[in-house]
Length: 292
Image (cartoon, rainbow, N blue to C red; front, top):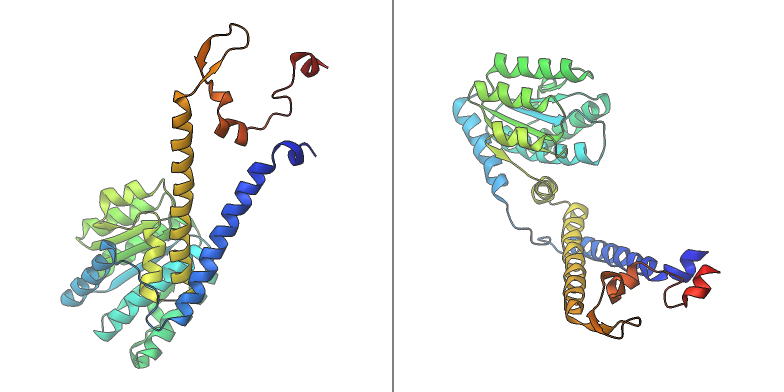
């Protein structure tokens, strides 16, 4: 039970942050549901790129290709499918063909339902082609080869790579780049983002991927969560800045050395912020007691 005696401030600090974050998220989800227009989210530049890519594909009369990564059915692939629903809605209005390639059976099934529902809501059920949503392969490089073949055979004018990508990311990007397709990409794997940046026209980096999904779908839960998390991040940043400022101010404080009876600056382990987050049950006790 040593943590109860010496680490309770750390635990209290973490609990306060978690409670504050959850409160912000739940409050903003409620606000988003209550508001007709929803909460305000700034439109990022990558969203303009999505419309530009669809427009170019429509002008050229060539398909739009979408890939929601090679991961399973999770929050990331669902976010990608939300963005692809917007792309499909816009493409359907101009009778522009789409190709949505999946590497996971569960993602494929959900993608079929989402795309079919988009056409039905737009009153364009007759334009929906079941072959537009395809299960290519669940093997990484077989999937990469299959998608690359579709890009080359159908000469897609716009490609969207959004989701979990790994070593196949550069294969997709280079193949689409070789035929002059406009590319919008985003990967939740930070190791693959540089490859997309090097070969694609527009890249959604970091939280922009989730922001794009919330902005385009306008789902109250997604919008409220995004706004609540941003407020929580500002709160955490404020805590960090406050701690840095307080710790920096203590650098100018001095104390008397008990051995030499001379004035000296505080050591790092003598500052208040250090002692709060690094509790020591023996601090302040005489050396004789510590040895016992």
